[in-house]
Image (tube, rainbow, N blue to C red; front, side, top):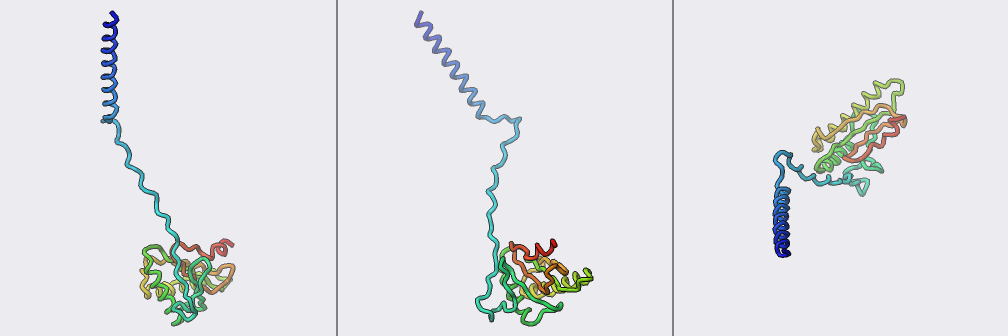
Length: 179
């Protein structure tokens, strides 16, 4: 009788094992009514560091007339709406350097020292300066669609200046625009 129990137990165990194998096989087969698994996540974006143009080593270099800003970029002092021949040469040399960058937008921020009483005239004068610098950048080989103009008008610092900011460089005029 013991022998009968053992064989019954073996049969029951064998049947249970086969049932578990069947369940495991069904568990590995995806249910056709369920949507497919999502695609794997793309890799994280590459962290790029801002590119800054190299400042000239000597004042007689090709960028003579451009003042290097501490956070990057260059400042050009202008009193009228036209660039001097030396400024045109310097801006065109800078344009060749910026055109070599693979991507990114260049910002031209222009401001004027006056007139304080007419905001519209100040804004138009700063726009004319920014357009003159943009023309020189284009003549130097920079694509026009990569250049953004920001005519700031008259700021609290009241300077006659145009800033050329390469990609990734923040505006030095942010605080002056808020006041």
